[in-house]
Length: 283
Image 1 (cartoon, rainbow, N blue to C red):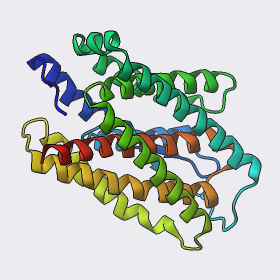
Image 2 (image 1 turned 180 degrees about the vertical axis):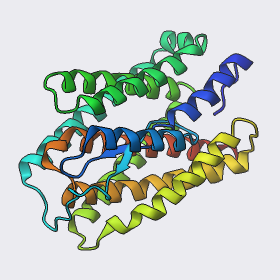
Image 3 (image 1 turned 60 degrees about the vertical axis):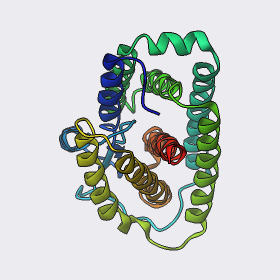
Image 4 (image 1 turned 90 degrees about the horizontal axis):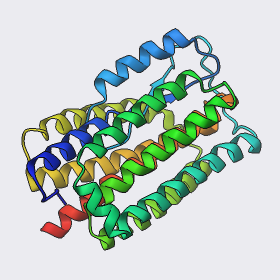
């Protein structure tokens, strides 16, 4: 649902969607990587990742690093437990925050009357995740930054859902939950090498980046439907891809960034499903 208030809110809505999908570069570190090489790859991805709806996916595939590992066995249950515990807390906090924004009319009205909140939360989230990437191994700073990033992301999602009907949000939430658990179970039991999906996924990401930029200037319900469907399929692929990397590639010390990868996959899938369901409702 496009905002139907005033032109400033509408412009803020579109620009923020574009900004938020700049977050499409989830940092995936394989073993030890120098900070300089990580930041240079991040900046490259940051320039590329401006597509059209929400959440920075920091996907630094440092495959060229000499320390890149290619393990065939799943890491210990302790690593997986850390990742999915962090992920569960992030999703829970985001769900509660979105529910508060969605069900309280006072907050909804305040959000719609303050279009700058979208941009502030998006930029704050971007700045926090950059800091988190740099200080990811410095405890407890990394935990504080993780909480700050998740909270800002939750607020951003909460702002977005206020522009949709409650029924559409609930449908998108249920679909996202089912899809994530289904794809996770499929990836865990599969013996296929899903790391080969990387090139295709990033090619699709390029298409969404360009389409999201053009969406700033042209709007069509048909294009919106196609972009939403394409984005949802893309992030289904990223869920499989990132889960496979979690199982076979990631360094055990990168549990925070592994959780962020999956968290942003979930958020992006949810937001694209929101757009897709809304586009269907308009037909």
